[in-house]
Image 1 (cartoon, rainbow, N blue to C red):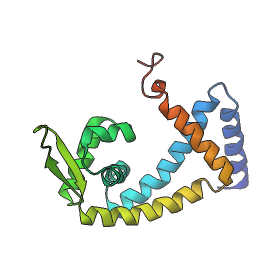
Image 2: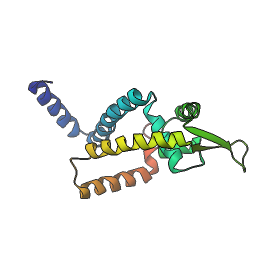
Image 3: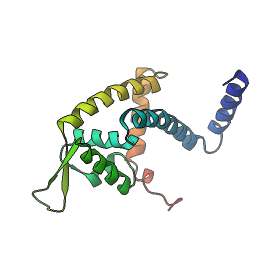
Image 4: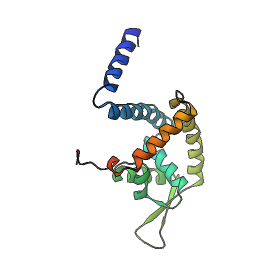
Length: 164
């Protein structure tokens, strides 16, 4: 990209970040930019959609998690989550076990192969996290995290009167 294009892009972004939708656009820009980089890498390197590794992460962090519970951690349509869980099972990265208290419930556990793959992906994700937040100092990172926690705790994030 030449210098004129960079300046034009920066001016357009500045205008968007100064608009009445600036907060939503700022969040969207950060999330979509990171997704573009992360998705491209995960799809190319591991031949899986980006949300498959986040599902594997959730299953590893919370052994015995149900597929529908992943949606509480990573808001995505349930059919998308079900597809990636099936992909993870088919690749022997995750196994399911029938719950002893509810025969309809399938509990998910990472296999050794899944845990090893996650370790590799997590190392890259940590490096990406450092890159992405590199412009913030430690205090700013904590402020950012605390603001994200506050927004995430608000039920208005996942439901809307404005966009029913």
